[in-house]
Length: 254
Image (tube, rainbow, N blue to C red; front, side):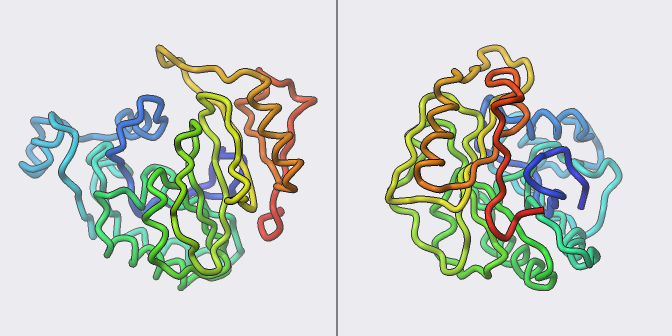
């Protein structure tokens, strides 16, 4: 696990890295490709991985031991780092842990066994809060979660709200509205316990800078619905430091 600059959590834990969503604004892909070591002609890369490097889909990797070139030996190829499963148990002081900040643990390509093993590791270290984020919320519905599990839905545009995603037992729900690509209305039939708001970072061509009124409207909705809201630093250039709101829900206050 690593300390992080992500403002709304204490640490990140990445037992799984890599993703196949292909979002053009993805910061994680840029990081993995920058610090990864996988080359298409590398002699220590399995043939199936070499194939993936040109197709960019269809292969996943399991690692029982740390490899040279870690933390992203296969760049953004979905990879299960099984040797990291005991990391939360080594931290005795409770932390707010963002799980799989460099992956989508509930992506369709992730085996059920990977998810089960990650949650077993969470159960072995109940002193922490575990926060998950996914674009594939249907993956949440078939699991019973403990009260220290927070399930997040990544929202970038209105269509990302999915009408039917199940009601997992005990789990807290939150929305991460980042990056904001258009005006967002929070469906009142699915009120979460927390909303995080952020803008796209970096200098990508075609980058969308959210309008201040979009941000103000989301904050106003949260106030009206009594939802704690956390605005990330990426919004400061748009709304100004004096207008920043950084609230934590009960159970995550530090």
